[in-house]
Structure formats: structure tokens, C-alpha cells
Image (tube, rainbow, N blue to C red):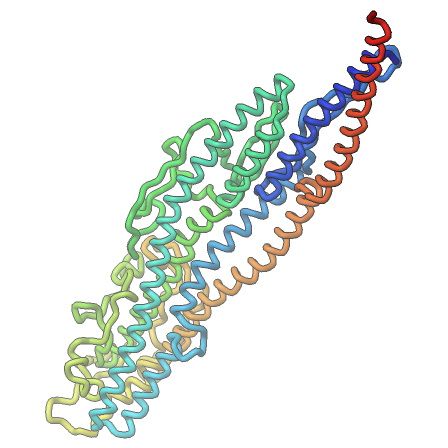
Length: 506
């Protein structure tokens, strides 16, 4: 081998090693960067006439399992959806109280029943009459708290949807821009590793928003879909508007803003991830909880009033009527308004005497006449009617209570309670609490399971593509040794050239 050839080979090797040092530093610097896959420099041997001439650097590439990565993206959407749902429902759990906690609806109703039972023993007791009123205020306050919590969570979901659509548009535009750069670079034989790592970071963000499917295309771009909806990366944007959501708002077409794409309503097609979960909370889960607590509030009010004690009313002092179209049209959001009748607050003795006469009917309550002013202090007819019928499964002996609505609920009339119509108020209160608690518990349990799957998938993906500091340091030592060896070759070649120059030159 000639000195010039050896000098050229060693110089080329040092150039290659420097390039690998730069890439190693790039990998180490991005070791903590989410979705970054370790990059490697392809090297190709150079020969001429069977003689080795060293190596040359190829294109920087990545090592990543695309199928496994798609699985991670899908699992990200599942976990984000459950996290969003769990967070919203746990906030309602905290207000509603666990079944049997003493602060839940069934417990509050039981406390009211106990106070009426105590009053039955001494109808003339002014302090016990007041105790009944306090117990009634407690259950009305609990209903208010749950109703307000549900409406607040629904408004929070609406606000999160607006923010989520903005993030969705920004992320899709970013992916589209990177796609175009990758296609151009790949077509010209340039490295796309850095661009792909940047796109993976954006895809990770997207996978938390929706249950996205990522399909890699031959030209280096990606095709994105959420179910049957292709997500645009060409600058076409999703659109929605901010709004105040009330109990009477529903989707579609009931005052809840749609999410549109190209002017078409695609709200129902956006599923999974935090955005899909917020849509489900706003349009289905929370309205169902609202419908259940509204139905309990109206049933509670109407069953007491039917016996001659209008104990619970709206702000005007009236009991909202049922029987609308849809069935809850007359009392949407009533849970947030129910209160103890101002007349009863002013005159607690009315819980003994009654507030209104009842004409009586074969299919309804029996006739009742309130205790007149100055009537017997031991009057207990009203108290007996409350304990036997208002709180019972019958409206009068042998006649079942009209059942609460469990289908055709909500502002749209399309929701269902999720349980069979309970016979009495205690069973209805328990069912309302249990239904929400079960929904929340199921989401929490599934979240724990799905997080385990997510961690396993991420671990498998990272084992093959994440930056290993130990591996990079080991590579650095090898590069240092190779650099030293080639530097010695250059030093020796340079010394030989100098000796040759001295021998040739006079």
C-alpha cells in the first residue's frame, strides 16, 4: 500500500469517526426527548480492484418496529380517554358521596324519614318539626350539589373540546409539514431520521387526542384515520365554537356546537383519546347523570305534593310537572333548583299539618284535608301519609306509585337511566348513586388495566429504539480507540513523508 493511499484511508476514517461522534452526541442529547428513536449512521466499505480503501458514511437512519409503534399509539388513545373520563367522574364522586356514606342521596333520604318517624311520636314538638325541615334542606342541598357538579363537569368538557380541536388542528398541520419534508428528502436520498423523530413526537400528541390509526406510506408520509374518518394533514381544519352548555342543551342540533370538517358535522366520528372522551362526557355520559338526578328531584317533589305536603319546589314555589315531550321537558336541570318550599321554611308546623288538600282518586292518592290553623296539636294524618305513601311503593293502599321515567330522558329524549324503574324513593336514590358510582368505578378499573398494557408496549418499543446511554458510551470508547489508531497511522505516514522528503531533497 502506498503512503498516499494509507494517508487517504486514515484521513477518510477519521472523517467518518467524527461524523459518528456528532451523531452519538445528538443521540445522547435527545435521550430524554419523547418519541425519539436512536439514530445510526450507515457505513459502506469502499474497495477498488479487490483492495480495501476504507469506508464511507451512508444515510442516517433509525431502528424502530413500526407495527409495535402503531400499537403504542392506539394504546395512548385508550389510556387518555379513560384518564379523561375517570377524572371527570371522580369529581362527581367526591360531591355525591359513596353509597352508604351518610352524605349520599339515599342516606339523606333515610335521615329525612327518621325525622318524620320521630315527629310521629310527638307531632306537637316544634323542635322536631324544625328538625324535619333541616333534614329536607339537607337532601335538597345534596341534590343541588350533585346537579351543579354534573352541569359544571359538562361545561368543562365543552371548554376542553374547544381547546382540543385547536390542538388537533395545530398537530395535524405540524405532521403535514413534516410529511412534505420527509417525502422530499427521501426522494432525493437524504436522511429523514430527524424529521421522522419530530413527526413521531407530533403523532404521540395526536394519539392522546384521538384513537388514531397511523398507516405508513411508501413515499415516507403517513395516512391518519380515526375510525372511518381520514384526518387531514393538508391544512384543512376542524372547526367548532365556544358555548355555554345548560341542562336543556343537547347534541346534535340542541344548542351544543358541532365539530365540523369541510362544513360537515363529524362530531360522532371523533372517538377515543381525550377529545373523544370529552365529547362522550358532554353528549352522553353527563347528560344521563343529569337526567337521573333531575328525575329523582322531580319524583321526590311530586310524591310528597301528591300526599298533601308540598315540601320541595322550584324557586317559584311550584313543583315542576312531568308528562312533557320529551318526558323531562318540564324539569330539565331541576336538580340544581330544587329547594324546600319557602312556605314550609316560614312555618315548619306545615310538615305536620300539610300544605294542600288532595281530592283523591282511584289511581292516585286518597283524599286529604290539611290540619287547619288552631287544629289539633297531635294531628298526625300528614305524617302517616308521608311515611306510608310518599316514601313508600304505594300511593294509597293497593295502588302502586307511578314509576319514575327511565327511558326517553334528557333534553333530546334519547337517554336511558341504566336501571329499571325503582318502586320507592329510597330505591331510586340508591339506584342513582349506584349507577354513577359503577360508571366511575368501571372507568377507574379499566384505566389501571390499560395503563399496564401501555407500559408494557412502551417498554418493548423502547428496548429496541430508545437511546441507551450505556450503549452510546460503549460506542464512544470504540470510536475513540479507532480514532487513536487512525491518528497514529496519519502520524506515521506524515513522519515517513518527512523522511522521504529529507532523503530526496539535497
